[in-house]
Image (tube, rainbow, N blue to C red; front, side, top):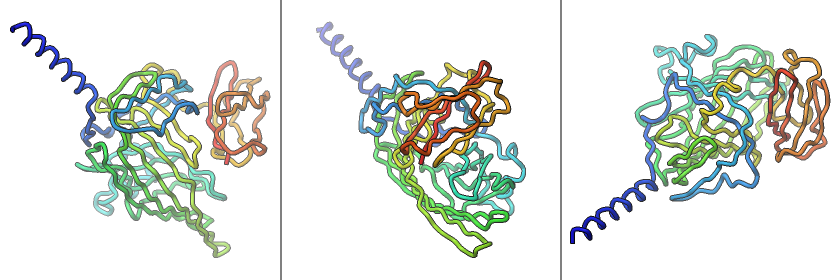
Length: 352
């Protein structure tokens, strides 16, 4: 009788552990990153044989085979450590209390709109006990620093995040463009927590929930010289993120625009310091409709440029070329490698 009770107790314990190991998590705002936090990210090019969209309850995402392409870091910077000209709306609790930010992150440049260059961008975020919001951004707009607040603030997430949750928000801003006119964006963000389970990356295995976000953007451009304005829709962005209770940042993130991958990374401590610095070599514009050029100031003599398709097959190579054309190629993602005996960089280029 004692043996039966002991066996039953052990069996119950094993079942309990199994159930606990596969139970869904609820991700609270307390787990999300805050000012000063750093994510060390390893970049990769999504393998077309892997289905990043698939999700569901008790799902197993095995992405352990994805290939490392270099590392960088994502930093939640203090607002007062960003360029002073960017801080106008985001560090003034007396004049702009609704736009005071808790931290800022380096954002993506915008160079696909004619006569518009938005570079050196910082996005500003505000957190509360139940939400994460984007209140605006600072950037060099056509070479001049500017602070741009969202007239309608964008809600990124409402917390806690739990399987089955879904929500949406809208945002809008209009920025004055020196010597040009004005540029604005209408943004609609929809997200759904569409899965939970186990995630394997080359670095680690996690218990996660998965959040799928769709971002729709409509751009407005007004040119003073011609007294003319136009609006146009950007291709939808799909953002896939996996969150674990052990981390304040997504442990894996993949984004697609118009069906083409634009940014992919996973948290990784194995390669810290390998490429955690500002790039010595730059490649622009990205996205492009034809040519991409290279900043060769820091390249040693005899550098080589290689153009590869999305699965790594070489299309073209040249020595000491400062630009290459993609105009004859189909739209999609291409890999550009620029290397010499001292430096090497890998870029993922979107051809539109």
